[in-house]
Image (tube, rainbow, N blue to C red):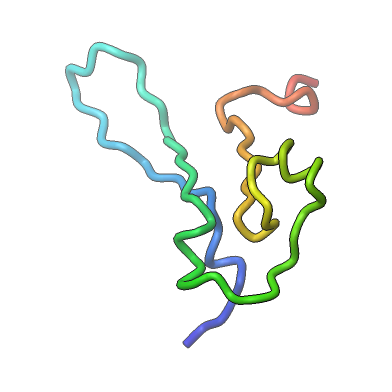
Amino acid sequence: MNSNKSAYTTFKAYKPFHGLYDPCSPIDLKYFSTPPNLYIGFQPSNMKQFSPSEALQKGTLWPAFWDYYENPYKVKERDQL
């Protein structure tokens, strides 16, 4: 079994079907995010924790369950050059 960590990303993409008579312009790739808790079978004891103030900002106490979402459709500044 391959234990490559890069195979388990929380950010995924798929190519939707485009019909001949679709009224909207097609999006080549659609993206979605899966929550990190899908990849942890159970919560192990003694997990690393954020500080209380940082946990309030992130919305979770444990870094393993925190997931940053970046909008894939938004054009980045470096791509505009």
